[in-house]
Image 1 (cartoon, helix red, strand yellow):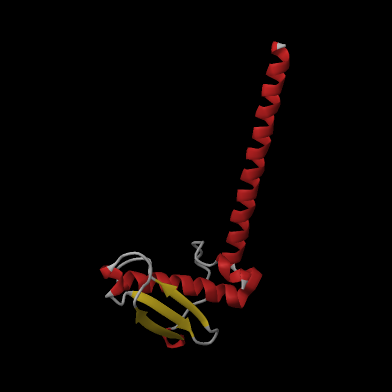
Image 2: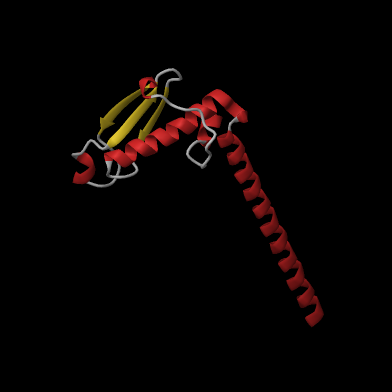
Length: 127
């Protein structure tokens, strides 16, 4: 399950393909803020990949067509992760971005320590 959290975060082209015969698609009412626009329209897309049992629910826009497209992209990434696991490009890209984020955090911490040390040195020089 933790592998599937990486889906929706990348832009890779080496993914497993989906066939329309493997998909079950439903249109349901979305949830969340939006009032009447949300409560009376069935523009939320629920897409299920039958062989793996993976389900994606997409209600990012008011357009059914855009939601269908986004749901398929996310489902394709999840299916790729499901079958390839750690060998998936999605997983590798997620790991790389986490590593980059940690490196940035480490550099910021070092910089803060340097500034703190510099201020301490200035305080000692004034005395």
